[in-house]
Amino acid sequence: MADPSAPSAAAVAPASFPVSLDVRNRPCLVVGGGPVAARKVRSLLASGAVVTVIAPELCPEMERLAVAAFERRPYATGDVDGFRLVFTATGVAAVDGAVAADADASGIWVNSADDRENCTFTLPAVHRDGAVSVAVSTDGASPALASWLRATVAGDLDGAGALAELLRSARARIKAAGRRTEDTDWGTLLNAELLELVRQGRTADATRLIEETIGL
Image (tube, rainbow, N blue to C red; front, side):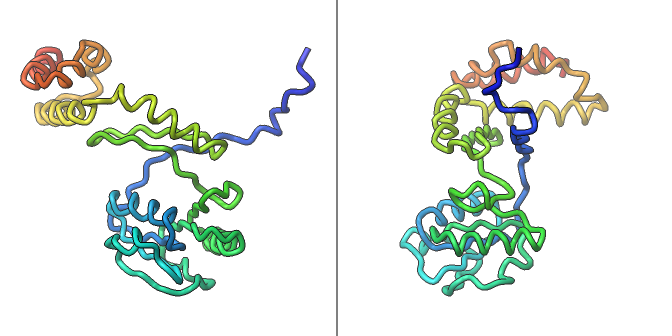
């Protein structure tokens, strides 16, 4: 018998759709000038976005960031026009709600800090090692849990970025030889202590193992 206290399938919200966005040279707007907004700006800049900030006042951390433009004024309706992504983090519910509604009405994806109901996308907790990124999301249920899980798995990823570059090179050589990368048994290769060789600094041994396994 079904548990009557369990939520029905209709009552359970669908999971969010995970995606990695290429924001290089894309215009992104951040509304807010405090530390939370500054963290959003720093992440966007690290991803190559062209960032505009609108806020009446800027915290010292924000002042130091090399954004495309600072507009020192309150947000006005229509300011979202022309941007690919919008982030609002003013800490004033009415303002953040207005920005989110404006962006959504304009068909622009928006993230409202600490306000899941006014987001059309949320931000996962991310660990990066070179080309490798691991993102953990709780669909906004608990950012603290997402951050804790990210920290838990981060240690297991040491060296993954360097390994990714070796495999990138191997894939390029396979393609140059006229072969299909899909025909390579990458799983067997990755299970052959390849990451441990990279962690030990034995790059030459790791490269030799890759070449022997995939026939380069």
